Image (tube, rainbow, N blue to C red; front, side, top):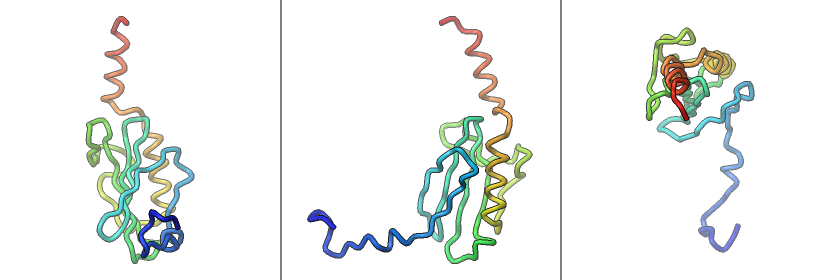
Length: 125
């Protein structure tokens, strides 16, 4: 504790929080607390990403929700146009989420990024 910390500040509860890691995935997610759980947003170099929600108070066997994201717009949007998931999946395990993240990260490069690459290839710099 420092002089700048409020008198009621106790760092111990923060140290005991259970966090979920996905070491099989190269991308580091953006973490955000949402009502009833945590939201992890992954962005991959191929133009796709994933939104993973871990619900508080659920057994780890069914605590996760998963959605593939199209990360080519400024704000990532859910997409069902991939072979990974045709929509929003809920009630899944950490292992299932991990496998889905790996599949999403390995998807072919998004068509919009491929078009942008072709266009850039035609430019003179």
